[in-house]
Image (cartoon, rainbow over all chains, first blue to last red; front, side, top):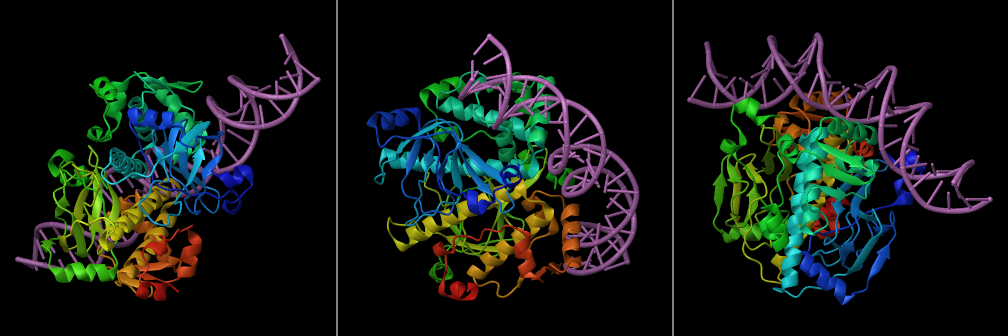
Length: 248
Length: 248
DNA sequence: CGATCGTTTGACAAGGGTCAAAATGCGTGG
DNA sequence: CCACGCATTTTGACCCTTGTCAAACGATCG
């Protein structure tokens, strides 16, 4: 959608940019959580990181959804990726990092400080895994936006989101809560709100997915998977016992 | 374009994927070049890295163009990024890395082995800078494909390519050689060959750019820059004396 | 001088965007 | 519990950008 048309504001006034992030395993996540490292809470829609600003500290997302976004001069918005619990914010090997995108809380969000990792530590390994995962998401996103049509983009997103939620145990089976509006989904998929709505409608009619009251239900996963050439994330990097058994 | 329709082959037979790369400064580049680290030559169109295969060694691109690409099951192709001299191939912090995309030689290409960087060395810093640059390209690519129309995508690409070539001293002023076909450009911008051709045509008529016999000429850079909300790469990360003076 | 690859053009179709308005849902305050 | 206001979803009508198919044109290379 076009932020300028909706709010009358232009990017200079509603600025926006951020950095590097991805997924910690549930075990690592709960370790951080219990360590109570500088817990921060962000209300939905609050900007967590502003594009172009220096990155102060590194955080991990404990609960809630966030997204990375960019807003163009004329107000068009692109959501580059969604951040789920376990994803990192502001991790980067650069010495004086500047946020490359904004990061926005999608729902109410809780973050904690992500400790600096000593080389060769388990945490350093987790950070490297995170970077690889994030790269995977970016590559998938580019391919989606460049070559998939609306229905395929939505199908791919549903499958990807399901996988990611399963890894942090926020989804089992084929039903899960999505704290995003259709407008955000449109901005994430490079479509308009109206077209997302129509696409979802036709997919419901065809018995593929149903999305009502914030709950996404996959009605026919087999057909959904056949609809797109979906490339799952490299599980070798991130599999947990529970996730491994579920995906089997 | 659709590789399957053109060649009759499907991805299983014309497979494809790779990893992490970006830009070394010209000085570092020439150091590597003179060191004669396992120089390799790849003819145009040859696959340098195959998607899904383990990454064996890390290389730097010394001369020529390459690209990262993915091919979907039905043959649609997406070029994720172009690799220019100074970019890295297969650099990645993962222990058992698997190529996430294919890497294809666009023109004739020369690579050398990229030495393993000791922590805190200048080379390690260069690798980190490379990773940041690559991320910048991915973010820009996502935003382009999601929110820019055909003319904006082409304009943005011309500006980005000019900047990158200037950093490795392969372009001064507003003229440079492009070893890519319109078909490749189409696959990189998420458009069709026909539409790229028409877009370039209309941009030539409007006095923006001219592309003839492999030479791109920017006719009106000011107007081109006003046409898109182009975000230049973070020069702080990569500026060299020569590049800095030129961009001033 | 064919063969092949890349560029250019035409005619037409279709996916997706735009604008506008009507529903629907939801939290707040009376 | 109801009414109001706001955000979100849904729908309709129409248009425009981009894709598709097909053919012609041009260049380069044995």
